[in-house]
Image 1: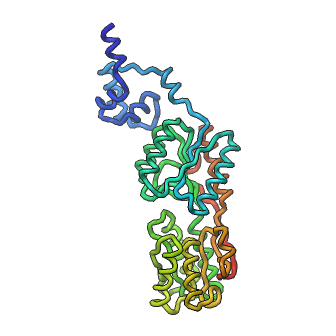
Image 2: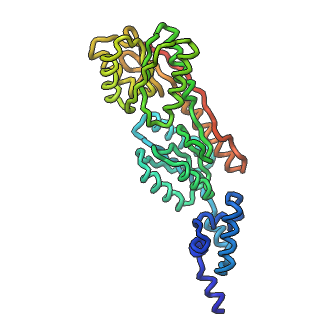
Image 3: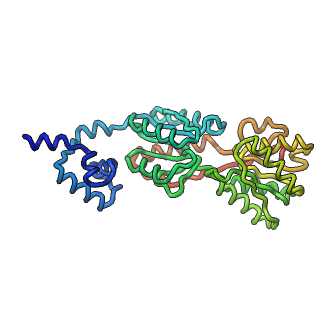
Length: 335
């Protein structure tokens, strides 16, 4: 009787400590998951035998029962594109018979971790995330390995286990830069924030367009924060040092707005003196003076593919690791 009471007091935390592994690793072994190495499994089983731990499968089944809740963790609801994504995702998640729960992390890793932990306690079925800047592959993989369904959208954490739904950023800048070249531009500058997840893909598209059209001048690429004020400042510096610039490829509409502002201030006519194209095609872009050409991301298709991936996960089907959604070029007066 005494030994039975002692075994009952042994917890999963005791097993994890004895085996020198995490609690989640012990849980994976107990649920016979294939996501744990043979070495770790052996250590956990040895600890269970040594401590006399008894796994209550009935209680565990009650704890692990998933709700119909889906956590939508987005990076910045003040961004028009992000807000549009959140609204459309909520709508499409409801069509799956599930209930979305939305939180914005404001690009803060600590807030993202806090929100995810709270959602885990609510036992949500899945996480759909636009990861905050600085999100590590290890953190995301740990969330995935703990048994939750995870999908990242708009931003990809390189080599992470969770599937990603992404716009074709490389194609977008390739199309836009190709258009600038085709209408006569030869000295084209690219303005974008290097710290953005999608920067390398956009830069690759910009450079591939120059190469495919045999534009041989040294491309001017400027690192600029993703906001209107930074776009204004960057263009002022650009025009002072590169007076022969005849086109600007902006990696976001926010930056392009700043470029248009400065051009008007110094007496240049956007679209006539210097051509400008943005990226994201925010709703305000068509109302700028002049109206801004921009690469348009198909938000509805991003959300549709995301919910399709979620449905595949819920049914036990392994979805594609990466889904690329097409983009289009919206031409207006600025180019």
